[in-house]
Amino acid sequence: MSATLSLRECTKRFGGVVAAKNASLRVGAGELVGLIGPNGAGKTTIFNLITGVYQPDEGQILLDEQSLLGLKPHEIAGAGVGRTFQNIRLFKDLSALDNVLVACHLHSETGLPSSLLRTSRSLNDEHKLKMKAVHLLHLLGLGKFERETASSLPYGEQRRLEIARALATDPQVLLLDEPAAGMNPHETGQLMDLIRQVRRDFQLSILLIEHDMKVVMGICERIYVLDYGEVISQGTPEVVRNDPKVIEAYLGEPLTQAGEGA
Image (cartoon, rainbow, N blue to C red; front, side, top):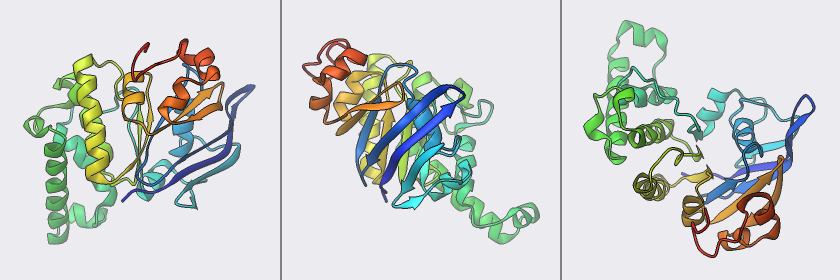
């Protein structure tokens, strides 16, 4: 089930550089929200704050009103926040199935001693996790690549596999960091359909970083715009694409319809 994710006046400094400045945003339960801005605006810093890679110098990060501050990345993943990365971070030499299985083990019901001893409980747990991984691969159209190594998959399928691995952690909120990067127009169209499917089938809240305006304007219900670490605009795609501050800082010209001028 989906959850509400909130950042409240978060600031993150790296020496004299302020990567996030009093940044506040909210992703409501079941929402699909975009986060856009120029390169270096602080978008990935926001993701790293949410997932515990960094701790904010000021501010709060809440998942359904429960603070995520001080938690380690694996604890935040266990609490219900999954993510993908701008640069694909698959285990290149493992099969597609094993890549997803690794993530499934976040919620394994047996500990290390049982697994090492190969008890009946651990074997049963392993079987359930494998069935879950196979099911996810098929849901995302990757069933035929189950035994293929991740490095051998086409680029677009590697992106799908990364999403499948994130879903294997049973997230309530899914963070997608530039999932359309490097894709051709056909792959981008398929990705848009996939994101809609994932939200519908898994009942997730989704926060999406993306430079492809066709994707952002085409699937997001609300959009936040960052510039120099600050939120300079927020609202529906229609509001954001016509905001003079956004046009000046990022878009360069008004977008009269989804994707135009991107």
